[in-house]
View: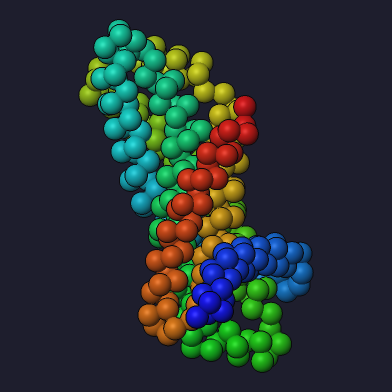
Length: 257
C-alpha cells in the first residue's frame, strides 16, 4: 500500500515535468524546422488563410464593439471629474497595449487553435501520423511547422487590424453618440498614443501566436483515446492557451516599459 502511494505521488510529480518537456520539444523542433527543407510554403500559406483571413469577421466585429463600449464606459467615468477629453487617449493606449493583443489571442485560440488541435488529434487517433512516420515524413515538419509559423505571423497582423477598427469604433461612439469635440478627441489620441504602445502590443501578439500554435499542435499531437480524446484535446487546447496568454501578458507588461 505504501509503495503504491509513493508510485502514485511520483507519477503526479513527474506528469507536469513530462508535459513541460513535450511542449518544449514541440516548440523547439517546430521552430528549428522552419529552416529545414522542405519549407512547406504552400501549407503555411494555407494555414495563414485559415487562421487569419477566416478569423477576420469575428476580429472586425469584436474590435469595433470593444472600442465602442470602452469609450462609452470611459466617458461615464471621466465625466464625474469633468475630464471627458481624456477618453480618446485612454481608449487608444488601452487598445494598443492590452486589449487588442489579448483579445485577439483569445479569439484566435478559441477559433483556430481548437481547430488545429482537433485536426492533428484526429490524425493521431486514426494513425495517420504513424503512417507519416512509416513513409519517412517528419510529422513535426509536415504538421507543426506550418501551423506554428502561420500563428506567429498572422496574430500580430490581426492585432494591428484590431487596433485600427477598435479606434474607429471608439471614434464613432465619441462623435455620434457622446457628441464629443472631434478636434479635441483626435488631439488627445495623437498625443497619448506613441509607437512604443503599438510595438509593445504587437510584441505581445507575437508571443501569443507562438503560444497558440505550440499548445494547439502539442495537444493534438499527443492525443489519446479515440474520438473522446480528440474532444478533450480540443477543449484543453483552448483552456491552456487562454490561461497561458493571460499569464504571459502580465509578465510581458511587467517587463516592458
